[in-house]
Image 1 (tube, rainbow, N blue to C red):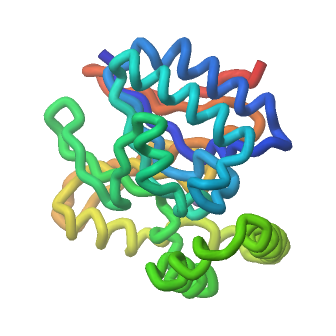
Image 2: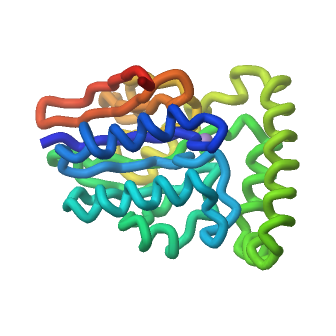
Length: 242
Ligand code: MN
């Protein structure tokens, strides 16, 4: 049986082909799986469970029928959709996982993360993250009317797009010392994450001179992307949107 991992779909009404591709993936490939893990940034933006938008509703309905067919599906927040709450999770049949969750993968302990905290060289982003992840800030934001929330979200998103263009590529990737430290803290030699949109299976020696593995999931901009894990091991796969 196969365990599937996806992340960084960035579903948005402006890219309906990606949403369609994900709905086919749920009905097709994923319905045969033992479990599906969504490691963040399922949506390009999320302003609250009370305003899912048409794409959010469509995905909610598809996830509900997917999970109702008996495939356990877990979701971890990304930096775009960290406001997904218990309400959306319950309606979709998703189990919400905290960032840095350990699962058993055919007898091996695997650490699951979205991956944004690994990009520790990007100090400006880490500062921004501490603010928007604060429960007080989130409560204040969620208390605003939907229109005000979407306005703020659009502002932040255009600012983030502008700053991405000027940031050196190195800042947008993980810091290897941060990777080693979090793996050491959890006592794992396997880490699976998304966020950087640089799909790869990296192997390196950890502090104990043992081989450690870091698997990076791919995004769903130009194609679909999935990590399939079978008893014989991991495989990153890409497939066309149509
Ligand atoms: Mn991300």
